[in-house]
Length: 189
Image 1 (cartoon, one colour):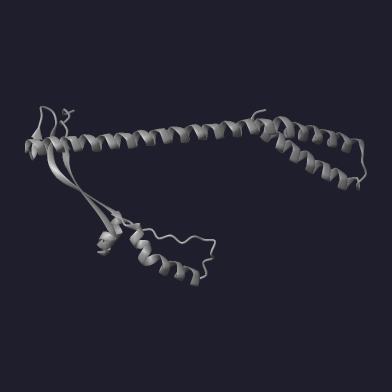
Image 2 (cartoon, rainbow, N blue to C red):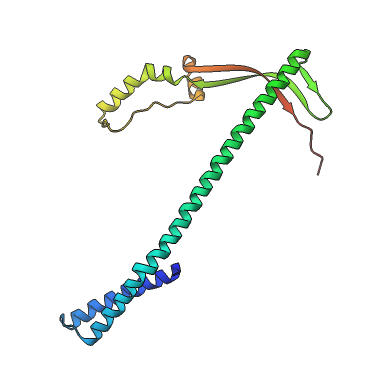
């Protein structure tokens, strides 16, 4: 049974139900041969929907759930590949940095690629310190404001927000020697 068949059958069932109600009102509740025919038609459509219709919708739902699992699995696989590629990039840059330091170069230029020594500075939030200083205060204020115990209170901030506020004591800074990578220019089109 196709979706359009289900929709048509539902419309037919609603129409027959309304027609049957009108007949009962018109005949003051008396069961007439016309009412019996309407009841049989209504039951036949209801039976069709309750069996073939439900199974068709169930198959459709199962297909979509399987499709969603497939997309989630592909997304997870892609995320792992991106993470692996990033780790490989970091490893290669560390090796280039090591070669440049060992040979005393600040700049390296090959036939196609060139590199310049630089320093990478990455800031991250020291969440333990943020929580140690502010969590109790934030939770007390939330509870006093009427937030119930079954709602978790979490503190969230970014390294950028901390830096802009000048609260650098809440930042963990990692400084790493690395390289800036210059690729060959493409041809003019």
